[in-house]
Image (cartoon, rainbow, N blue to C red; front, top):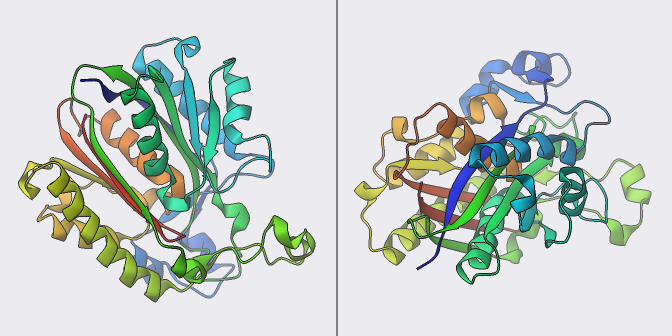
Length: 322
């Protein structure tokens, strides 16, 4: 049996750091209020002119180097983002050109905060069916560009960044299962209320920003993530105690803690980066995974659960043996 196994990870964060204290100067909030409700202390924000692909490229190169392969060996690129550089071509194609890769399929996936898990699920199927041998999967965002920095309910939450993994076909156990879902009836609880169909008038009027009903999103997220934990364990005939590490989407420390309780996991088995990164949407899971791999918390053969919830609503999980 062929598995899709993570061969290398990489990440990149913009140098520009915005702390809660910085936000106190521009919006009616406090460091204590933000920490108590979200667990966030700071976030990295792209500078003017710095694009999603600008962040993705160094993350991708680090993942390729960690995998010990040549860039020319990549035969599939899947790029998860909600903030692409252009309407078209895809960010995947722009990144492909920068990496000097030609000919392989390259495309974007948009599932907001669940985007990386969606992309990982698709890449897993490409590899298991023999259509790919070495896939580059990226999650990257400049979410700060779609944030209203006068809205204290959203501007304190989000940051920019990129994470990447190289998946390779292997006889060794890798991704055990992925599970992805969506329910569009919740669209207006978390969305950007305008887009290309509206032309650019509303964008120019400053309406192309994230709108979120936080309390409602929180309730659905906690309940839904609990269910996908059960679904994932059942599909693999595993017990909660079989999971070594939880690498969740980094949206809110309270949501992360609720998922850990569902798994009966101590927080020292949970990779938490939300305090330093904020919510980086599709980038958050590969960023957190790379941090834990590089500081050697996550070791080869550890069983790792990735899970995410995002606008759409979308949600998903991936269970893997690292």
